[in-house]
Image 1 (cartoon, rainbow, N blue to C red):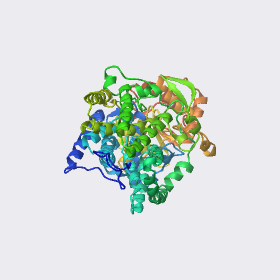
Image 2 (cartoon, rainbow, N blue to C red):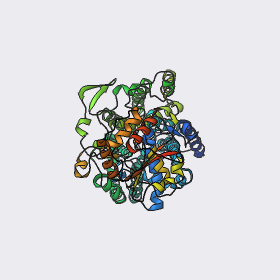
Image 3 (cartoon, rainbow, N blue to C red):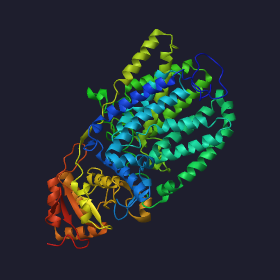
Image 4 (cartoon, one colour):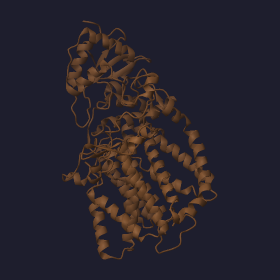
Length: 625
């Protein structure tokens, strides 16, 4: 039977054309019900931010929230100042930041620019995060109902699982790109439509536009979706029962893909150039691919933000709480295996071709998620895996292996929809099997029901920034920085720069920041792996060390000479210290140590509004003592 048609109620010959799932007389009721449940769950998961979006921050990932809020502020700057969407000059002075080599979410930043201007990046951030989670669940529901199952309850349950699976709840800790799980079902939907006779031009055009949007929001996720599509269609097309059907559709599909390549290649030519060959690019990623792998035991464990964890059954096998990408639990893994076996036994040949292709996709991504070496219970074993051969290839060299586990969410969602439909439509006649499967679904899904993401208080925007007082302390070509210098673990300065852009103001330039960039400047940097933030200089490290560890260095004139050189390099004309500064994961930063270090280096500060300010004459300050 065709991959593009739902399973028939009774045995039937495979249809020669794609057949849409009958939606019933009033499908809007089911659609509305699933949409409202998905939205309610998304608001529940993000409720800590909604209670006070301006003063609350995700405690497990302060840095990434600051990064995406910065991008949302930059979206207003793009529209108000005609700035380059893929290169920003106001951060990492004097060099700037290649946004195409990072996650630019350009479509979101421009689309939500009005909301950002009116309510601030803080509100836009939590709005997009909430809509991402709800939209992912709803998109998977629509996809499953259109292509695989008729029963709305089966599609709804599976869609909600896909949207709120442990991996996506984990990424709700700050990742507006990875929580956009709706990209996968929307692109897959259009891929399956490529075979429609006589519509290759339209379908190819639509897919090209979708790829452009997907690349601008979640390029790594789009890569996984393309990879999954290729593996699925390749395995499915080689199955004997559907081989003739695939051969007949091939010319139409190829024509459509040609149109897709032209459309997407044209629209993405500049961002692709900037990503691979633009200024401040680098090789690979700024993260260790042997560290960011999925521990095999993690698949059998429960995530930290789940009902199971609430009762003490959580696990710390993820590298951090933002990267718990599998964590399905033993019960769900067993349920998926049993469901696949049962569905296979009951399937006619065409449906078996689909099940085989789905299973191969799952196995393919499972092995990739383990990375270059097998890990078990936190220990790396001396067992080489296929990813070791792929790690230096383009695209694979930029991926974090453990994130390949997210593709299994879609695989499990498909199996869950199919087996749930079998139960609800009473196609399984054995009472024992019915009872076992029903209990298995409950026991599998209940422990991984999500808890809201954790949050903490964060430092408010100082009046010094909000009122524009800062403009009196820095020239148009100069730079201004908060203390400590912006980094992922203390990102206040980056947030506050974002808020100036969100108001439509010309922002101050600042050194450092939280982003991915090269290890060194020039051609040498292109050949090296990336890093988080700018390469540290002695002076910014002086303040980071004070903030994180409370360490106050005994300064000499040699330190002051180095600081003069660093400030001159950055073009810094003033630094300021707010009354409150924010650390990550409820970590207390040592503000007094920062203040003492600045005073020892630069002398007594001015009290301006609600901050301490030190003026700097580039090349002159700090003076020797």
